[in-house]
Amino acid sequence: MVTGKRPLGWSVLVALTNGRTRIPDDRLAAAVQGKVVLVTGSSYGIGEATAKRLARAGATVLLVARTADQLEMVAEEIRADGGKAFTYPANLAEPTAIEELVAKVLAEHGQVDVLVSNAGKSIRRSVADSYQRFHDIERTNSVNYLGPAKLVLELLPSMRERRQGHIVNVSTAGVRTPPMARWSAYLASKSAFDVWLRCVAQEVRDDGVTTSTIYMGLVHTRMSEPTPLLNKMPGLTPEQAADQVCAAVADKPHNITPPFVRPADALGNLFRVPTDRLFEQYYRRTDRPRKEQP
Image (cartoon, rainbow, N blue to C red):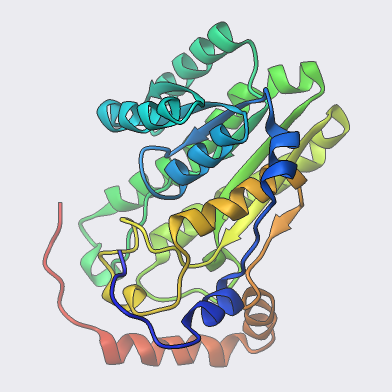
């Protein structure tokens, strides 16, 4: 996490680069009161902050992540604050675990009104350090693409039958901006689910199921902390990021996009070759041998 004093105007810079979308408490409550909302990756960071705010607004939140103890700690905090929370430890990289999760959730709650697909795995590693690490690509795809897609497939039949449901994809601004060295496995997996869900959205909208994608800017969490460069850049707190997620839950926009993304996307496509060369030069200047990690 980023700590310490920031220069004057830092909060303005954060807003200009990453956006500041916040839905008023009363409008959020009107949208989610009595609704069942399943939040993946809710043991820490954005997912934890999102679950807490949704619970305060009157939603019944279903907390999903691998770590049972941490999930229960989050649930206890929500209950102590007067909210409703239920924990469902599950490894979303395992298809059978997702099937069991959805079967249990539907048996105990009858429905899921909103799915917040937030769980993710980040890897920043050069291809030179990845020759014997194909499992990095397998892991990121399992968590960032295949698992979320399987979860949507399991929940869609009940949503379409009831003609009601909303899916929020917490993606990354990186799938809309020019690609950067070292982020190949992560960005490819996030891009895959982004495109998959956008295709699916065209098929299910007439059945009352809607989708929103948040191209989230930098958020200072446990996931970003290992990358020193990111710690120096303007980013959101988990609570500020949760504001964007809650706005997507309530208002159901097609997407929420940080201010810098659209011009970066346009310029990256218009000047693709020079942009690639620029990032290539950055990589060469910052390339350092890395210790092998498990």
